[in-house]
Length: 356
Image (cartoon, rainbow, N blue to C red; front, side):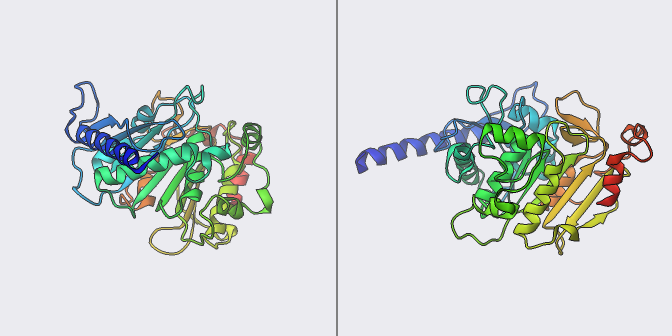
């Protein structure tokens, strides 16, 4: 392609981006939409090697410059907008005035709408789905005139595993991330390997989880690394809960911390909350929830798939971890604490939690 043709292509891409930006700034939501902000699809956001869809959400009150940007990655059998609403991130975006980027997997890519976190061609920096999500973030940073120092990613299940890979592949892009029911970066290199690691966490590649993450980073990258919040239920039968401890080992290793140096904070009886690192905001935190299955922790009853009422608002806690919200009341005692009452006095899960 000669330079004239290349210039023409770039000019067309710019024109489409401006058109999408105007749509975000002017489109009014439908009367049946539960939020009054602007939620639209961006059709042209640059390179899209992973063939993903991009939605963005701009709350009613958005600062003209320097807003935080949160990227949400849904799990299998979910859609991006529905996940953002059910998890509470749309409501918190309204409250905090933050912009959301909502990548979405297409059924044509994966019948179950799972991100391909286990495929090297989709997690390598600049390639596949990783490259598409990076292009979305770059577009959103320009579109919202967002703060490049306050870009965050949150993911559930397959979306969480993709999030850990993104944190490793683009460590200089993200300030922090949160992963729920997920696996470490570089945990698998094929579909079969991914299924095996979901069933049984297993040892790290090359005997070091931190090195598995470093292998995805830019050559020679030595830090700093993003902060991370890790969430898992002890009764998860989809993703082995031992993956959470592997995540702890991976990210404490990247931050040069000892995995057994975590401090346990006061919490609900069925919740273990540990933190690593000194300072106002910890470098690593881990939440282990007794009796919780595979899903996203919420504190209210809901019929939304993979949203689990365990008396804990994970979104509020994660927003606090990111430094976007003050700590208030994200821990709420359950009226009937079945997670504990259904367990024998010496249940293995309870004993395991006490040892953390």
